Length: 237
Image 1: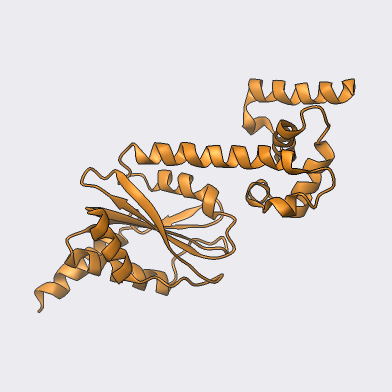
Image 2: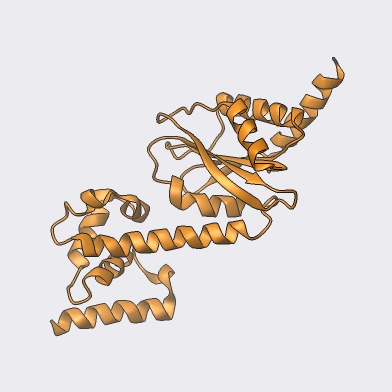
């Protein structure tokens, strides 16, 4: 018992001195598991969780019932994992909701990466912004298969009018891990930009989230390109 207590204390001291970056993935999980059972050694369970789910992110996103399939992990242990995950999400959401984000594709990525990086299906989200480019709300519009997601511009525009949004940011994930836009991604983005322009709503960006990386249509100049194409098409009629 004293040995286990000493090991847990070393983990806490290591965290306080060097932060989470000094930890191996299994040590992070071990520390979270001890929140639920502070008097029990959770090292073996933490290593088994990493072995089973492969990555730290996958453990954090795992279904509680799947986590409890590991011998020695019970509801109290799951509590620690889900608590830290959800606190992180709330913190990032709060930070996003209280500052302009029009020039920060990286901040949008940081916020949603925790939510989308382990998704096995594509999810298409929209951030609705006010005239100061602050987020009014975010909404998921579709959840598709591994390689496609049905997006309906009309539904998105109707929602933007309900929110009285001045601008929007689109975000979706690629479960493959490669954020490179497909031709379909480019086509739907162009269509969304065109439709938004008709309603005098600005599309600030479309961000595709991959495995610890992302693609920004705005950063790559594609949003501006589609806006210019819309104006050219409009002037030709």
